[in-house]
Image (cartoon, rainbow, N blue to C red; front, side, top):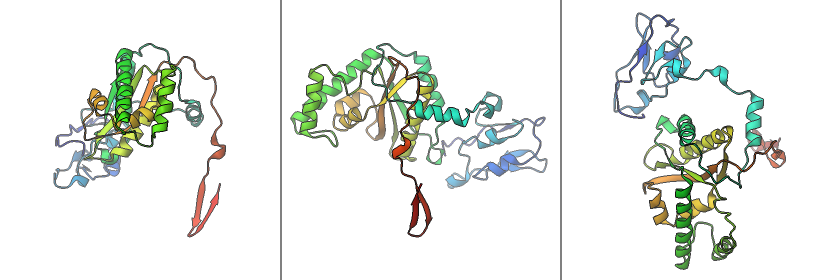
Amino acid sequence: MKNAILDKKLAIDREKCIHCGRCQEICWNGMLKLGADGIPHMEPTDLSDEWHMCWECQRCLAGCPTGALSICGKKPEDSLSRDLLPSPLQIEALLTNRRSCRSFKQENVDPELIRHILYVCGNSPTGSCNQVYECTVIDDKEVMREFTSRLRDEMYQQAAKGIYPPRFTKEDLAVFKTCYDKGEEFCFRGAPHMLAVHAPTTRGEWVFDTTIALTYAELAMTCNGLGVIYLTTPWAALQVCPKSRAFLQIPEDHYISCLVGFGKPEFQFPRGVQRSDSLKIHRILGENRQELL
């Protein structure tokens, strides 16, 4: 259950309702029932039974064929139509054209665009509809410079104590420092902004939820002409750099899936790549039998 508010503000437009029962059919928790007049109503909620209460998934709103149902303060006329879905070829183009950006313009992205992208990504699926993940964003390039400097310095300080990021060795840090001393910023790749998706480790599926949300954000940023890069090295460093994590003001009990840097790319790639040759697809035919497609 997303929250404990019992009044889900169910509203039915009786002029539009055709009494088809679709809302009752698709309510997976059995909370919507048709009355004797054919109009759906909300069943009483038992707070001790989370599996049979409204999860605020809005399936009823999305599935009503005539747009007669509103719930949780959301109206069907404010939802985007299925007619706007991209074609399979357009999705293929998106997936093959997204690239890790390693060259960014040193200018800020419009904060309203960032807010809109993250707002849309709030529709990503989550375990049990909990939707408890949060987004922490650095949307100012000067703040980003401060954070990258803090993280780098703290990582050096920790290394001097023999504390290294996960999967890093003393030799790795030596190479890292040599590159930075030469002016090679290969850690953040000059990204002017950063996004962290995180969630408490007490509810939901925090590993899956945050990873899926971050993937949604990456694809949405790509569609909006932004460059994105996954920051695995800074993420690893953050695990052993508490002061830098505190700078981000992310609660200690929150899991961070990864970090992504983003911004306006120096240039756009005019076409996608063809990297599926090495993909292995195993088809299971029965016990102890499979074939490689």
